[in-house]
Amino acid sequence: MKASMLLSWGALALPGVFATPRDEIEPRKGSNSFMGSNLYFLPGLSDQDQDNYINNLSNYGVKAVRVWVNRQAAGHCEKGSNLEVDVGPLEPELGKFDNKTLDAVDKVVNKLAKKGIKSIISPHDANSLLDDYRKDVYTKFGKSGFYSSDEAIKAYDKRIDHILNYKGAHSGKVWKNWSDAIMAFDLQNEPMSPDISVCKNNDQKNWLCGRAKKFRNVLGSNNKIQIATGGIGGDISHECTFIKAATECPEIDLIAIHRYAGSQSNNPGQWSGSATKWVQQAGGKLIFVEEWGVNTAVNSAKSELPAQANDINKVGLPSLYWQFLPKKTCPYDPSQDSGDNFGIFVEGDVDIASVVKGASNANALQDWSKVIV
Ligand SMILES: *[C@@H]1O[C@H](CO)[C@@H](O)[C@H](O)[C@H]1NC(C)=O
Ligand SMILES: *[C@@H]1O[C@H](CO)[C@@H](O)[C@H](O)[C@H]1NC(C)=O
Ligand SMILES: *[C@@H]1O[C@H](CO)[C@@H](O)[C@H](O)[C@H]1NC(C)=O
Image (tube, rainbow, N blue to C red):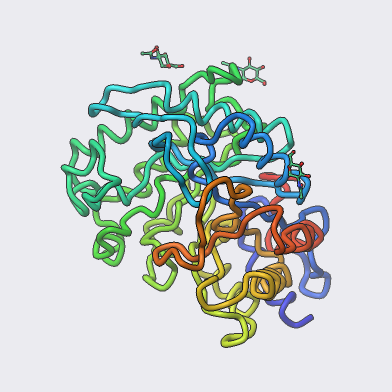
């Protein structure tokens, strides 16, 4: 009980939430927590595989899925899924847009919406700045230059404009006008993670808030679609998640936490014990865990997923798992994937449904009723 008191205090700073006298503070009613998954390659799956996966998530009670505007290479095995749809980059050249990339995303956002699942869309991946296999037209600006060059900023704002004004080939909806399906846009996936000195210095060029203003200008002030940080600096341990440049920016709505924690038995209460502090650090903004995963190389997903999820749900922290994977169609073992040990297959022996239900039944830590029901 003590924990929920403290947590309630954090939420009082929320704009639009009326302060209640101290002795009336109770766990919130009318706002439940929720759980979902990331799946950056959902647009690359065959129609049938998309339908099966989305059907499975829907059966589990999933409320949100995070998808990415990125390339997909057909004909290879991506985390246990045979990719069948080839998707090129949105910008083959800087400022030249190929709508086919967005068509592929529109298709899955539309399918998710028909099942009542909201999408969080990441418009670009900061890992593209690393000059590895993910490189793209923005790589040339450099790991920190991307966040300070006027040319890069101008180009990125054009990308934001294009994505928001895009009219779906499948949905027929202009994305900026599709709050029934789109819960939020990230500013980028893990901004500044390739060179965390940029966020450690509190984003001197005001990139984060500048891009959030851009999004909000195009969306309009009364638009329900939220603007999320996308996990500044990557994992929360890099200490950029809550930098003032973001928490003091009025146009940023959601602080996305990315956290790959150790096993629950080594650190009991590692989620529930941190949530109060995070709410305080967020300065009145809504917080959610946009990426988390259990290390299946070290722990059994069967026991570790519920162990951590129950702790997350105990305080009503909304979360998206990295990643609930579609039923396996080609050889892949997450426990052997050194860079990404976190995947858990749907329809396997891990009880995903129970932890998702646990989230939906939990009172949310903060009031999400204006964002998602
Ligand atoms: C997953 O989807 C497939 C295809 O729709 C279905 O046959 C299967 O029963 C589903 N499993 C779960 C657990 O939802
Ligand atoms: C891409 O889509 C936008 C909005 O839906 C449209 O205005 C533009 O003409 C399209 N571009 C091409 C090359 O078809
Ligand atoms: C935006 O959506 C609303 C409600 O769905 C609709 O009435 C309106 O015509 C749409 N506007 C545009 C520009 O598509």
